[in-house]
Image 1 (cartoon, helix red, strand yellow):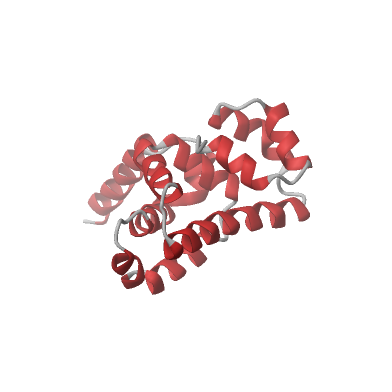
Image 2 (image 1 turned 60 degrees about the vertical axis):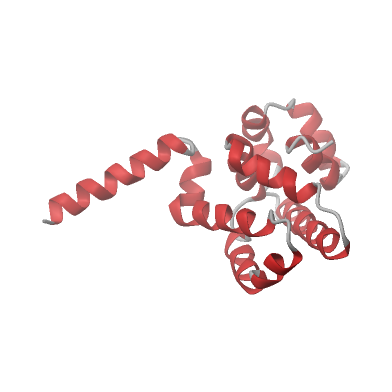
Length: 161
């Protein structure tokens, strides 16, 4: 029985590795963090303000669980999955006071995380790898990082403008 559980567990891990990514981004994220990211983006990409309010507490918890993951990794996962990228586009296009606030907080959170990682010297050494995964020149990414233009980096990586 233990061998069967072990086999199924390794098969599931292998499946997710193929679906999401086979590199360090998935390994850092893992299955649970990927599910948290999916759930958070699904919760945020709604058309009803009531729906948004009903998941607010859960969204805060999900957001906090994702804070520990490197923001480059989060962006790599989003860009590698069309369904997640579509959710980001939906969030970005939201209109209305509540939606604008949410959108701003979401992107401010990622920007703050990027700045914190830069302050801890945890950005520059990953630019080359990150650039290749999001298909943007390392020189361009370095420019955004050096000038701390986080919003512009996010818009460029996530193809928001």
